[in-house]
Length: 106
Image (cartoon, rainbow, N blue to C red):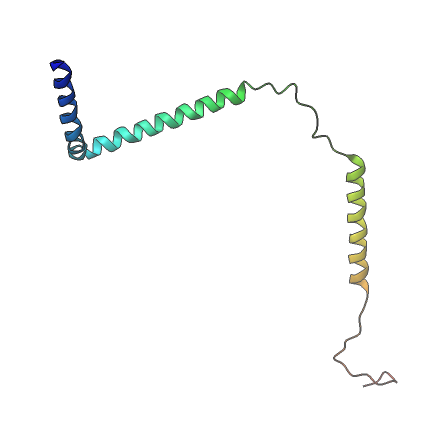
């Protein structure tokens, strides 16, 4: 029982000194934390790549096929709109700011 108490007191002593040790060696502490973050990020990336590459894509239904009737109707509507714009462009409108008499001469 005495051995356990000594180990606990040593652990408590070490944990109270740990912030001071980290502060004295701030550069190395930041370097270690940075390397741990990079390693953790690499681990996550690696696991995601393995999961994505091992997925079975052969059993996916072809739900992405194009509905040609809907596509043709959209193209037809687009063509009609272009024709309306072209007709509106060729029409000449009267200028409302010019006063004209009935004879057509100013």
